[in-house]
Amino acid sequence: MSRSDEDEIEPQPELTLPDAEVSARVNTDRRAVLLGSIWTIILGVFNRFGVGSLVVPAVAVIIGDPLLIGVAMMTPLAVFGAQVLSFYLRYGTIEYQRRGESIVAYDTVLDAPQWIAPVQTAEFEVKNAVSDRLLDTGTLDITVDKIDRDIQFGPVSNIETAVETLDLPVTQTDRPDRDLAVMGAATALALSFLVVPIGMYFSEKVAPLTAIGFTIAVGPFLFIPVGLLIHAGLRRI
Image (cartoon, rainbow, N blue to C red; front, side, top):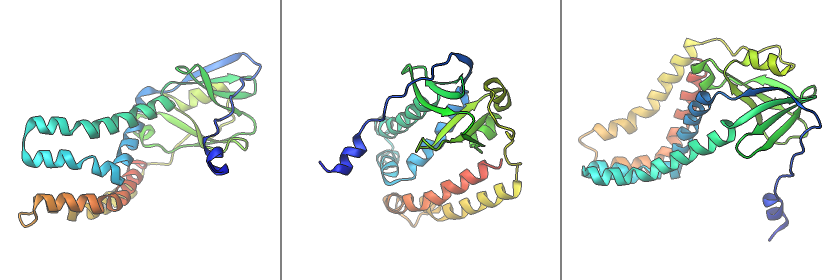
């Protein structure tokens, strides 16, 4: 085994809770966590494995056998369900605690801290998440010098109340204003990318298997910009 391989599989060091009592707690908004997981599902479709998992159901639909369709749907549903569960277990079971001069993301299922950030030296920035736009919840991205991965605070039901409860040094909690022009442009561009592949399924001149083959071959490259455009539009809804 190479040195690089050993580094990759080396477990993360165990976190030690600050020697201070919990002075305040804030829970995540589980509706927003579940809604946010939908975007994870969409991203799962925008790759070769995700598109490939839809091939068997598509063939089953063409054959028209209800039992075969039901069995074929088990694979993509399992893939998407695993993504939802993974996302939820990462954010939905977290309780944010103020302990002295630190903010702790405490996993209530694992009964262990997931990350610890010093309040005074951490940088907080409002995350313009789609789920927050739709549910009027709030999320903060946090940057800490000693943490080499992205961490976030939230989503929480009321970001202003959460900031006040935990006494965080955050003065700006507003997201960018709604921009109908961006939404319209993103929607128009996304539809322009989808005209040809969708049209193939409704064209009498194109065989169903040909349309499916085109989707498998080109879909991962075509749907990535479409997904990004949809995401850009929803972020300004």
